[in-house]
Length: 400
Image (cartoon, rainbow, N blue to C red; front, top):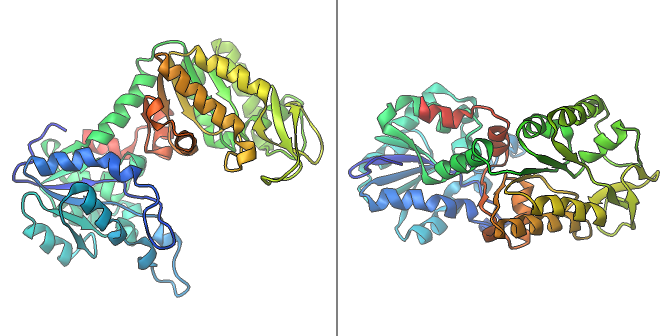
């Protein structure tokens, strides 16, 4: 972020899409705290700060009368906590565009902060509407995108607004820079061996990622629900386990590609099977290729934990995206928890570890290992697409 904010009104897109409880209290402020270095740099440098973000999907969850549930999705809930963290009052505009937003921005002085209302209260946001982008751009002299979590969306407040700022008047924030640099460290200049850990429910969600990982990783570990598609594709019995039957040929193709590329693709050798999709279900350890009828695999087994952990401990570069099982259920979280610990142990021994967003981050936090890994991404979908090799609109718009 190599610009002088002094005397400038700086329009900053952050990702304050934080979880709230029923009383609208913030239950996890990680995303807000990760943006603080950028915000403080602008304030300390003599700039005025105009902050925009989305919160939830208000247009997808309209009230019964078809109106927006402004009470549930207003960014006004965020303002007091942001004020406490920045140690300055935070003004609030009841819309991100329009006369009020422009008037309050015009009156803003150096060292002052204005938080705009939820950008997703407007249909033009997710459509990348040019007129909305133009109105947002009028609010600031310089645009900073520090919202990696939305960098894969061509929205008005991310990619659209940037086109109204010249190359010297737009930049990445510190968090966005860190996200890009750490992802590139894995993709472009990794120390070997590289171990990539993938999990989650569906092969289809991670197909492009698996293709990419097989190309550059030394070992690819596949766990979670997607593994059962691989087992069934190879003739295994998977009981009632989740399976994408229309993706079985693709799974076999990935196994063949791994052989051709000389990449070790590790699947769980054993699984924890359950007779119901519930924490209280009966469970037993079974061979991954022999899950009985009416049972379903919900976690990797002890042998798999040892095999995967051994591979992870040998790594110099690790990327992890996706849990090993239904870790929301405590009794089926052992595999995911063990992988989290193995990644932390490898990091302590000098490996570089990137936790690629989503449920993997939740698992790291749940185990209190946030500070025991090298970098925890704030963007689930964005990190996934970046690792797949896609050009993200929010990044491209700053570089163009």
